[in-house]
Structure formats: C-alpha cells, structure tokens
Image (cartoon, rainbow, N blue to C red):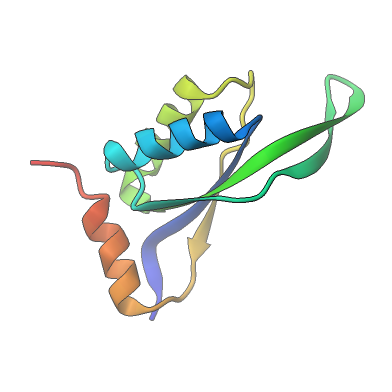
Length: 110
C-alpha cells in the first residue's frame, strides 16, 4: 500500500543524550509517531569550505506529511547545530496498518 501521507525524516545529533531528548520531545508533541535512535556513526562532510568529520547519532523519524513543517521547525529550534540535517523521504509503500498508525499518532491533539 502506498504511504502517500507518511514520511521518513532523517537527522543527526552529536551524542546519545541529545538524540534521546529530541526523540522524546518529538513523540510527546505528536510530531512523530516513532523515532529510532541508531548507533553512532562517523560523518564526513564539507562545512564552510573545509572537509570535516564528526561522530553523530542518526535518528529515523516517522511522521505524516501534514506535520512535516512543524517537525522541521521543532528540530531546528532544539538542535545544537547551526544547520541541522532535516531530510524527508516519502514512504512509497508499507504495511497499511503501520502507516495508519503513524497518521493517527501524529494527528494534532484535540
């Protein structure tokens, strides 16, 4: 089944504590149905004209497309980086019940 309204959003945090804090904030605010905190990784990137490396903790955030703008704003407001990665990927297909759960869990509270 097509996940028309479901997104997978990626971001990276500098450590586990920051990753846990942001994940809990996003789920509590219903901006994300689920956030997976992955194992630390090494990132290599160009920043301000120089090649940099950093240990980072990736997050996989499941949300609805309707909540993306608020989710991106919340990540930006809480993120320690000057320019955080916030990349959203459309979920092309998935278990229909799971996709419905993501939509239900990210519906704004009444």
